[in-house]
Image (tube, rainbow, N blue to C red; front, side):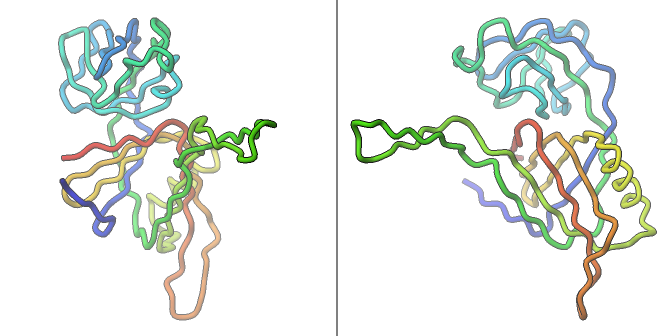
Length: 215
């Protein structure tokens, strides 16, 4: 058993995606095994998956290379055919590289990603029911020390204004790593108050799942 804390952690983003590799089949198994002819991946590669399965689509996974034509998605269980209908999980994989560290993070806050409920109020019952129907959208807000001359900050402004999707990685001291994929929008106007460093918020909106791996 291990406990992790955000202190000392780092955030990275990447827009460097290799050419898409076709995934021609995905098994209903734990873990899911993808067939992709001559994929060229190795153990531990990080890939962006596009899939007909909602819980896999637009998500970033660590992979295990099995053969020249197959790899597994680490910790992804697709054995439930109600949520992962047989034969419909095909799509593409893109290798991610070129991670850039987000500079001068002062604070972080995350919201969403929790269970979303639908409320049912049968006429025959006095008490309504909350039925889990999915998950709420996830957002993270990072406050950065404002340095308008910082090259990475300038690049982040451009990505936000063009609504370019990015892959994200958060590393935690002790070995925990979380991945995601979505939008990153960075403010230009600094927040200012006496006695405090000028800061700017960065809003990250996760489009698929946030997936965490231990050391």
